[in-house]
Image (cartoon, rainbow, N blue to C red; front, side):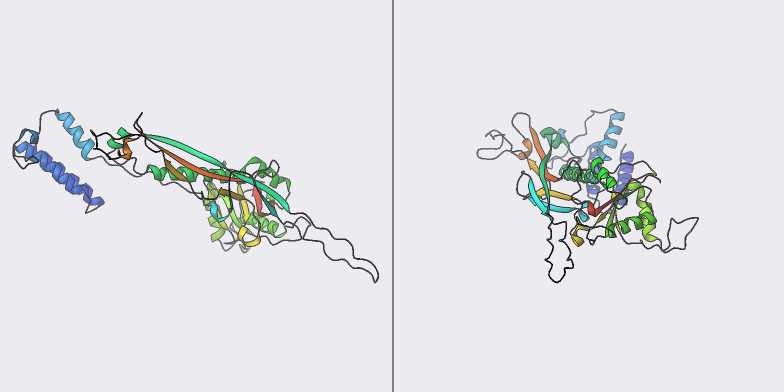
Amino acid sequence: MRRILKGLQEARIIQLQRTNKNHPRIKEVQEMYQFFDNSLSGVSLNNEGAPNHAETQLQEVMVSADFTFAIQEFVQRRMHGSYTVRNFAFEQFMSTDTVPNFQPVTRYQNRAEVDELEYVGDTAPAAAGSITDATKRQYQVYVYEKAWNFSFRTLVDDDLGYLNDTTTRMGRAARRSIEKFVSRMLFNATTVARLVALGALFNTTGRLTSGRVSTARIAFSQRVDDVSVPIASQLRYIVHHTGLQDVVETINASQLVPDGPGSSSNAANIVRNSFTAVDNPHLAGTAPDLPWMALSDFRANEIRPFVLARRNGVPAPLIIRKKMDTATTTSILGPGTDAPVMMGDWLTGSIRLKVHDEWGTYIDGTDGNLYDHRGAFYSSGVAA
């Protein structure tokens, strides 16, 4: 038996050293197997340094099968990290705003120039000019929350640290919630219908190709304000379905048109590296007909296709713990000492956590979430 234990010890140490030569559990394994070996040999020390006391002996409480299970379960077990989740980096194209409370706020946007001059004769009076009112927009923020209860006993028994990264995963859940919200802002039915109704300068059909990127760029260059004055507008971002990742990389890497007629094309790929591709992992679609949307840069031309609002003081999710109502007694911790937070509430012994966030956007029955349609161009990705 001692020879078997020695072999198990050496094998386990080799496993740990392959991961990390200075793995912190190597010392623990050495001490554990040494205890078993000393117990089998009849020489052990208790906490006071005395050998062969009853409390230091390996007792016969397990059959051979149980012993094998114990070795495998308690010596070999470990906790691997959770999956690495994918993010939707919407901040780069999303205009943001801050509101003071939960009431609707009003924003005005100048979306038209004044009239041009007209020729007048020697004695003719100047014609009356007109001024177009600024466009009124309103939006507000709402509360989004989720609560979890954790048992005091569960936390104490968690020797593998499974719950150690709980708050991190809560934060990821909050992030994922707002990512899905932004994805719905761009690709909801009302927003899409508005862009389709605006005509060829705001939408197209067909899969993503360098030619259709060029079509979208030309469409952006022909945008006008409310009185048909040409405005500065450029395509800067393409938000696409995950299934189009190789397509956008091919377009950005090819010096010649990668999807021209025939097996190759001698035409220069003029759209190469002219846009930033943003992968949206929350966008639904069935290959090969996958949707995409082109957006302008709100920082460059004061065109804000979409706006994400937050309340002042809440720029990110908040993780909140409910105050514990457990009181101390002299028989537990002594007088005047607070009970440990892990004990939870008095009634159930639970620790209660809540993730709280607040956000909102422009919502309209006709425009959907389009704060300014001049900054967007949509394609369903369906083959023409």
